[in-house]
Amino acid sequence: MPTVGVTRDDLFARLGKTYTQDEFELLCFEFGIELDDVTSEREMVSKEQGESKAADLDDTVIYKIDIPANRYDLLCIEGIARSLNIFRGIEAAPTYKLVEPKKRQEMRVHASTKQVRPFVVCAVLRGMKFDDKVYKSFIDLQDKLHQNICRGRKLVAIGTHDLATVQGPFSYTAEAPGDIKFVPLTEDSLEFTGGDLLEHYATDPACKHLSPYVPLIKDSPLYPVIRDSKKRVMSLPPIINGRHSRITLETTDVFIECTATDLTKAHIVLDTVVTMFSEYCADKFTVEPVDVIYEEGSEGVRHFGGAKEKGVFVGHETTPRLSTRQAEATVRDITSIIGVEILPQTICELCTRMQLGPATYSPTKASVTVTVPPTRSDILHAVDIVEDVAIAYGFNKLMPGKTPNTLAVGGPLPINHFGDQLRDEVARAGYTEMLTHGLCMTKENFDYLGRPNDGSAVQLLNPANEEYEVVRTSLLPGALKTLHHNKSMPKKNGIKFFEVSDVVFKDDSTDVGARNERHLVAAYAGLTAGFELIHGLLDRVMTLNQIPRVPTPGSKLANPAPGKSGYAVTPCENEKLCGTFFPGRRASVWLSVSGGPWTEIGCFGVVHPDVLSKDKYDLDFPCSVLELNLEPLV
Image 1 (cartoon, rainbow, N blue to C red):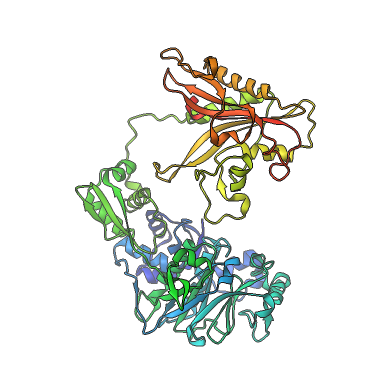
Image 2: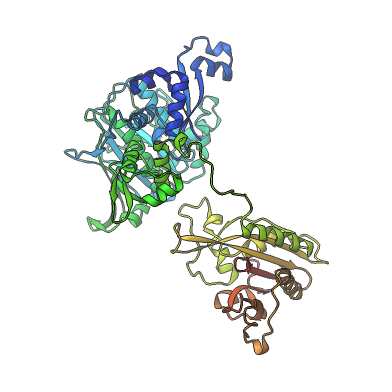
């Protein structure tokens, strides 16, 4: 949870009221934030660096306020004061507007940026009025965003420039480190090349605040760089801006660029910066858009392509979006979750207090539709609306003096309780439990197992590396990788591993588009394949569940006795699974619950030599595996 430090007197001036500490703590509680500490600049420096360093500092009271991690609009005094005033009903939520200039600024993105940071979004704030306090808040907000949603500048890096010192159109390219020469913001006149500058920041103690960002691009053959039309370097993202275009107290027109590896987060960051500080523009809450043009071969063409410019395909986007959208929650959901009956009109008024207005009630749908402004990127689901209604209504007023009519006794979910019991029993059978990562490479999940990629795996949009491309749909990759990393163990008595954990499949019928399944995987490796041992473990699991085996004469499934459950084993004919196992040494596991239809719940067999080959799981000894879906057994 981020903590924002604001000067108490400045905050009270913006709120138009002076509070005692207890009164302000109550206001924070009512709004869903928390006053964490009351301190001063002298006190903070004294604690961190000693009394001698704090001697010349003042005792101005600073409030340290804890902010929800997803409320990026509250990371500065402007956002906190504005939100509290709207919550108290003394100020209307502003309307943020895109104002068309005589000629839009342009940012052209070269194809070379695809190798480093492929996206950029931009905006212009006109007629800004800076003073010391506004300037400090402007810088602090960027730092807070870099620490939070930007993930230490890995996902997004913000650059701000004095528009009067540069000339558009601007270009975003990736160049060899030696070709980038400029005076960075940290220097007065000393010029560096890109490579020398990063070496300087990595080793100079005076630049230790920048050293954590150096590894982000240091080993890249090309460094991202933003230039103006006169080829002057404005920024070397995500490290430092150029001194030439630096912001000063005399700056009136601000050009903002955010380079990114995650386009969605880049838009959130840009919207947050411009909505917070457009209140200082000559025309309040107005922003000037910028055209971002992605040249052929750049990543943006895939997202925004289609247009032709001089015979070449380009991608075009206008930023910032400042998008306003609609979200809906039923009155029944709101009142049932909160536990209080609230009139629809009152719900609409409460939403307005939380900057989700105008809100309207539809009698035909019995639902409330709210307007989500660009500052509220945290509203993702109807439950988020319910939460804001509860905050505005008042947590202290929920169920006053009322106790539940029913006694709720906590306990594990049935699937978790079953999984815990099963772990004990499999361990007693001589297997060692393992815990593997839920993410893997696409190839490991499909190609390495000899299975076709049927599109059932949930893909990560921006994986950290190729090891974490998809959420696993099988526990087998983790089991086989564990065997690989433990292949030096003695095999005389065999190596036995097992895991009870979740796999994930795409499922459009769910709210989130995916569902979890609890699976059991067991692996045996040794001097022999151990098919009979894995088969025996399956029989043991079914015996513990009091599910008898149903004979399968001629490998045909026969119905169990009416009303009785049973399981059966038949040769595996599932084309999606057959490639994993050796022909003739593979089987499918079927389950019939209470005499119902047969359902395939798993498979087992001797792993195919192709799967164990050196270019896949690299195992030089035979092994057998069992994978079972546990959900139908609960």
